[in-house]
Length: 279
Image 1 (cartoon, rainbow, N blue to C red):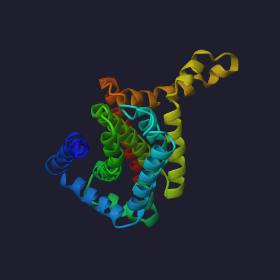
Image 2: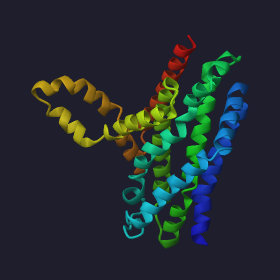
Image 3: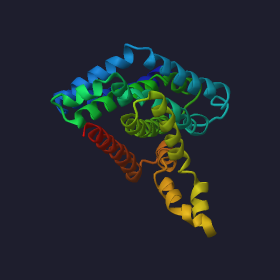
């Protein structure tokens, strides 16, 4: 019973507050056009098998691997970082693009993108509405991960504040990967191409933050110096260091600003791609 109460107080109530804030912003701050696109897109996820299949895949992979292969129960970790959260972004490299691959590719394939762009709404209305709908799907996935939180609280006394920080950091990473997929989906009409290219880019973004890459940049010599600008750029936009800091409970403004700026840049890039197609 204590574990259940902890789950309600430490996770269910904060989640409900975040959801209430989101609904308030959606209905009282954002324009009506954004709400229309949001409702349409969210309905399309849950009236097809897409969302349900992805829920099963994500929860099956993350929880099953954590319980049976990463030793989450035997590790004695108070914050779940090593046995659980450090692996979640690896799953999201595939899951987030799978959620977002249809954002614009499906509109182009069906020929409804031209119709949407002729409607009396600004491109950013459609971009934000679609992105928020996909973000809600990813948010729901993380919320449904509660069994692992309840389990560790039932068996011990973990640091729930750090665990919540781990979920927040994971969600930021998921939103970054989703924003990348939004850009790629606006460029191509093939969902498969959007998925594969987005997965490749997300993998680079994740691995670009490896400490070994920073060390390699310092030791480049000879002809390899030609690749320095590209490697430096990849290292600068790598999300791993920012995720690690937040997931360990270190709330740094620099890391939050990085995630928000990265997402905003990708959404602006999506707008540019759509405007080019419109022209």
